[in-house]
Length: 482
Length: 144
Image (cartoon, rainbow over all chains, first blue to last red):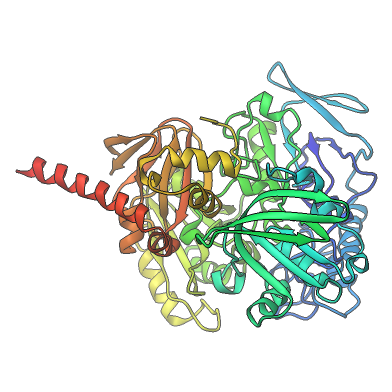
């Protein structure tokens, strides 16, 4: 049972279908697309699709340059997004993305019961009963792919007067106004950027200092596309960026008064504004899952998950799509997974489908074997090209296992945490990793007698890990198991 | 203490009850609550991994964890305790596993961000230093 028809739910359904797992998909929406049916507010994505890339469209390796298409197992339905783009930007427009998802669903024959809202959950023997607006469903396993769809605002006195990001009006209605934006993350900067040609003054305030992705060298922080308000601020234009807590918002007639306390000990400041907007994020619509025992963490209340996307507190409840951020992985060097975006969670869905097929339906397609002489070439090629490893750094890995009967088995793409913390036959997992100095390098994890050792290989300025140096180091690292 | 997902205000309240943050003002606590990450670990899940690079600094908000070296248990950690600082400060991989004994709720500062955090919050750095001094005193007594 899958709940949701955004990219996460549709990718999972596709992968389940191709493994032969019977399932139903329900969605409250009338059509596929999830959050992309409405957002981003300014109608263009942050995630790129490069129409012309080092690898041919329609190949697996091209996926590294196409962050937005869903991933079929055959070449025919790959790379749908670049087919639909008009060439004005390598960031698809919202409508192009919505079309991309709908095209994938249509062309691959994904079946969804639209207009069917999940309203409640209870245990039913070994499984669950899901109440919906179209009657009850019973299932052994449920997967929630409901996105972060519920606007969230912090508990600040007067916050009820403040519209959320989701309620932002057309930009021209902010012409000549003083706009106070609560929040300094990407959505705050998206609005500020869009208001630059309209608003008289823009203030962004929250306690945490602004982080920029080009400074953190990761997806953490405001993405490069929306940095313009930051530059306007540091050059003394019409944008004010403040590190301050918001104490109180009051409204008198058409005017807002926002009381703030500066985080750096600089005292209180009161702002007058014509408009206030809370860009304070979204949460997953958890419904009654907390009553069922599903625990969550952090401000966003994302359910805490095992490396295979199962609730840590309620077995057989899984998640797909953006919510798989709750399976945080190793988070090496503080760099998070890319599971909050399509280019990351589309691979999680494929892994989850394989897990569900194997664990609940006994479906486990034979994995291919490798000749010993091919191992080095294969692993170095994967490290240099595999989209799963490049999009999910330190999170997903290519794993080979030493099977006493079959020889060297390609175990496929697996969560790195599962390999590192799990027990099993001797083997190797390779991942691409990064550090805050913007260095990208291969990492090799060797498991022998259930002890895992880490080996970091050198970076390469051209991101080519098929050099003689890499080959020599990998040979030495694999010696104990090959 | 709230053991479900916390709001920033609730997290600030929780942090204020831990000795590491005892000297911070309400505004500073709220700022810290916005800076740290939060994560909940399943019973038995490893948080720090012996020999693996790139870990962080963890403060236990609720639950219990075990210190293990080569599979042997050397002690337990509970609410208010912190770990991962040696590896984060020195840039070396941890010399022990830390494993969640039961469901564990932690605040986290990524290793590369610890220096900036400590320099920005000298009272927290002083409290951490006191704690390290106590550990050193215990270790010295044990050896003598």
